Amino acid sequence: MSMAAEERSVRAPWALTAPALMLFVGVLLIPLVMTVMLSFHDWGQYKGIEPVFILKNWHEIATDPYYAEMFWRTFRIAILTTVLTALLGAPEAYILNRMSGRWKSFFLLVILGPLLISVVARTLGWALLFGGNNGLVNKLLMSLGVMRSPIPFMFTETGMVIALAHVMMPFMVLSVWAALQRLDPQIENAAMSLGAGPVTIIRRIIMPQIMPGVLSGAIIVFSLSASAFATPAIIGGRRLKVAATLAYDEFLNTLNWPLGAAVATLLLVALVLIVVGSNALIERRYAEVFR
Amino acid sequence: MRRNGPLALIFHAIFVIVMVAPILVVCLVAFTPEGFLSLPTNGFSLRWFRTIANYPEFIHAFWVSLGLGALSSFVALLFAVPAALAIARYRFAGRDALAALFLSPLMIPHVVLGIAFLRFFTSAGLGGSFAALIIAHVIIVFPFALRLTLAAATGMDRTVEMAAVSLGAGGWTLFRRVTLPLILPGVISGWALAFIQSFDDLTMTVFLAAPGTETLPVRMFLYIQDNIDPLVTSVSACVIAITMTALILLDRFYGLDRVLAGKGDTGR
Image 1 (cartoon, each protein chain N blue to C red):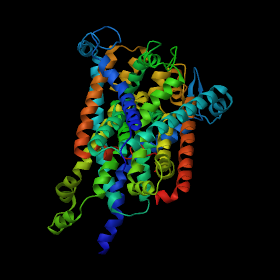
Image 2: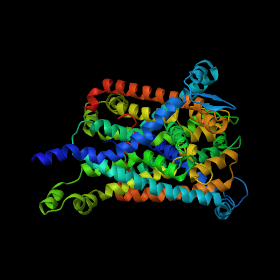
Image 3: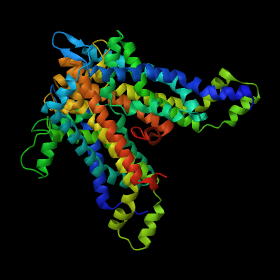
Image 4: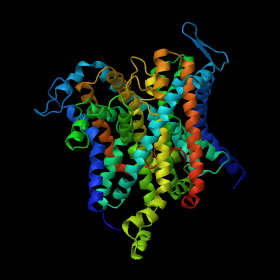
């Protein structure tokens, strides 16, 4: 390579990425830093935002039990949603993977397609299905004899978890499905020829191999559920607040921006720590699978 | 491999019904002839679709969403295509860090992005403007545009480019006549996926939109907060129909599983 060409290949990648890099620094990193700084500003009903450095908002979040309860509710809903998607999504991905070509791609489209359909429309669907004591879900469950009296789904955590699990389900199916693609079907056949029953095969052969897929799906579902906005806002109503809906209220109703920024910053930091931490754990535990 | 047993197929049937039910019920209620929320048991009617015409704010919001999605996805590609070529072709210091930065909008909760952009654009005097929405949407759709372009650029056969260079092509001509046509399927799919993401975003946009720049999801959300009636189901049915069309096209041209693979892989 000539000197000029070599110099160009050193400069070229930076020249090509420079516009995008400038865009990201200018309108992503700077706004994020401004938000963290905003959480240390003061705010008053009449004086508005005062650009001083105080810990008032952080102190309020740390001491007022309202915020502890709200964050605990947020993470409780996210955990239950994650468990529900894993318990139902992993078997479904396995069943899907055993179907023949045409059915497989058809049902894959049916199950993954909702991922791209408006979250507002999907949650509206659940609001219609739940709708009060005469809702379709209650009618169906009572006619099947699952329960005697209707239970409320709207404006409850149960309803939020069900609707969120539906919204997040494609991520879990996709993640487990990707893990199943790496699995060698011959191992299953080998186990069968050695006399293993179906339960043993699932427990000893399939489960250990798709576990990384379930766990990485769980991380995605958890972090998206903990920061979800549309579904908790529509199903949970105005009373059952989670982190995202509370931040929305502080910003657009109460107008206490610094407090809202503190809630958002705490959510971001908590999620980054949880995601990075569990990723590290999974990679250490399943190092051989990722190799 | 063994076939699915009857128990597995029953589980599968229930699973698929539950996945489809909420979407189906929205589309069915949209055709009700009644004046209240109900399933169309006494025949179908287009009454609530015609009612949309009496609500110009929904129609305006639709055009805002359409323009915003088309434009922000296009602008994102203007930045993403060169970046993807650099990441696909060169090994340079900081390459991994740059790729992580460019994919980071997938990891940051949209509510945090909404707040950050609201603070930023209000300070810049652009609060509630269409320009602010465009810039914000460019950032959130960028990872999708980048990822599909990157896949195309990585899998590209470079001997064609070398042939063109040996024939004297270079610079802009080489890109326009050889490189771009070769990665075009990836670029178009990237645009389509980016468009859908922009068209559907509520969480971030709800912080930025002002009357006049409200997108369709924002308009629908604000409407649902006040009351749920058949009107919002007919609007939703239209949105679902538009997305389904894009989805089927995307599946035909590119394969949905490839498009979605790792869509939300937050931690990789």
